[in-house]
Length: 207
Ligand code: 5GP
Image (cartoon, rainbow, N blue to C red):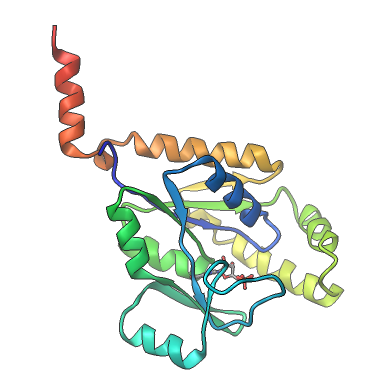
């Protein structure tokens, strides 16, 4: 195996378009999977258990937390969210890149103990553009939009902790930028399988 699986955290405010970016990225990369989180929030119309999230009760979530079943977890907007650890471990062992699409508190926890992590913050070009996108969804009241904008502002102030910042001014460009990050990170010596890279370098020296 040429490379080890890579753990990638993607965060960004609601309305930053990270969901669309991730779907496009996954369609292009067979070597990359998205971790499905567990949450105590109620499913939104169209959301499927086991596809978008594993929906659960607060009791069950707390039990799993006590058992250490999460790689990270956080409370956001009154609900718990957590990344099941065993799935991530198995994918990484198979050599797959695993994307965690998580909010900033959880991301910071993972940054604190995984030095091999690649963290990417997806941002919007401006607050005006964010307003336009949230309004365009036509699903939220003006009050909810204002709340989300305030949360987005706070999240944007934490972006400096991430390795990379990607501006989503145009979805396909943003996907390309993340692809570039993945490709470059995969070429780091530390991420290559030792035997593989030894073989490559020995071959390169044959006359
Ligand atoms: P939503 O309820 O809109 O699906 O998600 C709310 C926020 O929770 C988003 O910023 C999303 O990235 C984040 N989130 C989703 N799953 C997880 C998780 O497993 N852990 C953490 N820390 N955040 C999550």
